[in-house]
Image (cartoon, rainbow, N blue to C red; front, top):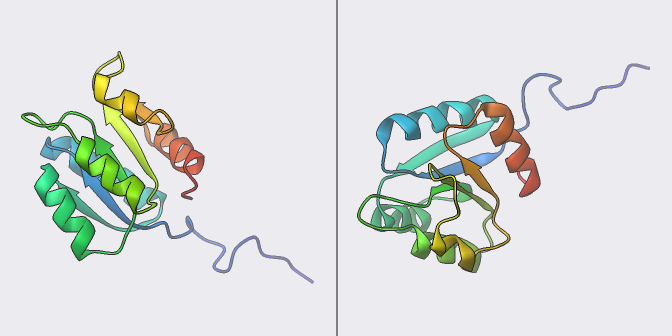
Length: 130
């Protein structure tokens, strides 16, 4: 009798809807494309803390990719909200050294920009997504 490793046998398993908190549109679109390749059922892009919090209230978000530095603000409030709601997330940053805000979230994995899809995949598995 043949066996199947998945119900469809093709493509990645669905990951749910991702929230991408990123103020650089080109980077956000690149991350969106990577997440869709990995099986995200959709992505919501927010460039500010306010828009990210609104998206969390309006959509059924499964996980998030959160840029640490959003220009004039940090994403600390978004990270605290994600933790309070029990949603897995990953920080992304263009800085080689840790940003002081990240010390408040020692268990959150960090990806350094730019990153490849393989690194994103491994980090999503690390947080229990995928």
